[in-house]
Length: 306
Picture 1 (spheres, rainbow, N blue to C red):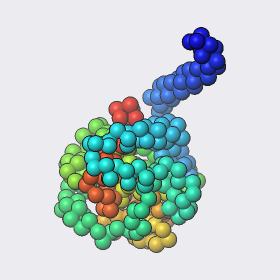
Picture 2 (cartoon, rainbow, N blue to C red; picture 1 turned 180 degrees about the vertical axis):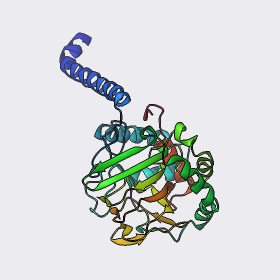
Picture 3 (cartoon, rainbow, N blue to C red; picture 1 turned 120 degrees about the vertical axis):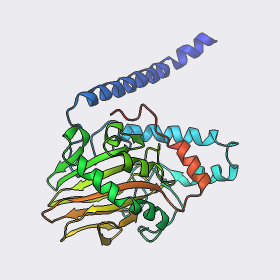
Picture 4 (cartoon, rainbow, N blue to C red; picture 1 turned 135 degrees about the vertical axis):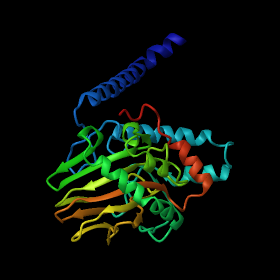
């Protein structure tokens, strides 16, 4: 009987085996190539990056996380209130294709969240904590601006250039950069709403070069609010548009917005625009929901390799 079953399903088993082998070698080769590329993140501004380790841009990783999260959710029954897990299970989706183009995150979406795109008038206590250390951040900023290219990620194309100095990149702490800005790193890590250790959590210095445009796009999820702290803001046409509303950065001020909404930015001046960007948990999430999301989207050591 076992032999009959074996002969019946032999082809299917071979197919699954081949898929597993191909998937394994795809990941292995991609990571090896990643290590030996001199600057793997130089790409067009029409696409976020070309890294095989990026959950925003690699379809394979999106599919992998979708399967893993679906499995993880079911294991959390009993650890947290069943009603909380059930609601998350019903509300969380990785199929965002049917969402309106004005708010279509490219990884996952939690239904029944706040429909507001701008949050600058909220989370004032977080803004106060950040701005109390503004002078410290500016001092450390001056020390990193002329570091070599290995510390910076660059996106460039016909629309200009955008440089990023990551302290945290998709939940992974970038130790060599954090050592260059230790006090700023300490500040960020002590924010109780910072998305530390989560694949959607970033903290970085963002430099939008003169005559540059970041074309309209949506972020990966609506689980977060993105905070911009103005560090060097040139005068002139330099602004950000979120969900059709345009705001200008100001030095020593914070702009907070839900980047799952369609947004774009431009710096048409002759000077660089510099802001510190920090990803915070969305204020509409409860503490229990945040704990659940931290487990579902926890970064793995193998996710990123810097």
